[in-house]
Length: 368
Image (cartoon, rainbow, N blue to C red; front, side, top):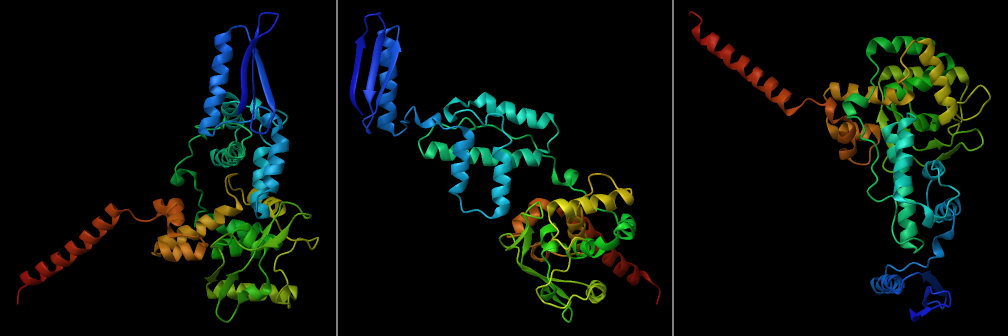
């Protein structure tokens, strides 16, 4: 920073000015000389500490900045869609970056919560917004992020938020599924995500070995944007399925005359790929006809699959691999409440031990 000066103007005000390292002149006017000096001291400190930001750098609007920021990212389409939804949900889209403050960010979170948006959705949107502000700080457009220390609403514990379909409700779902039944079955009995089921091709099913290989997923929310992409990181996997599901898949394939290994197993009546919107709409129809609560979704079928594995005694690594989680910790974060607790295991093991001891003791007292 060069050329720092303070001069009194004819009108009595004090003009403080400086030139930055790029040669741009910046000036402000103050009623008191000490205020002018304080401003210059703050600017000098910012330059020395590396926190200096050109006052004009933050003049870019939020929309313009985030569009540039997202274009610089190497993201898959699903991540890009989530980021676009997040940054376009804020109320300051036409404001300059430097004009956005902490109170506005907190107010946005409060408004999202008030209109009933799920806590997990708010948390995801806030994460992208905070990410964008951090990039603005890193690229010297603003000196600090107004989203620092802003918290998303507290999410419900996994055990209270998770919906699992009881066995007695499943026949009604399958009865009303119609042509969508096989799609539902691979989600329910193989644990596939919506996009993974939508991306299933004939070559992914090994009928002899009774297994399904998850090699892709469908991303996008419309016919125009739906496209196959690699599965989520760590999600490519082989799932071992029961004989009954393999037989049902075989009959389904034969009935539809699907022969090519790259042919999709599930297409809409208009011969389009299933994606988030149309698959969700189809399941909502089934849910309504089966008279199930509104919180039952296609993803509920995956939770139901996982809960059955755990109830059947599968360990965390087995469940992790079946679900396609990148690490066992992810599985535990979501489903730990479904595994028997240490207290349950201790009681069961000790009860069994006591029964054994009691049996031996009874045997010793029997008459010869």
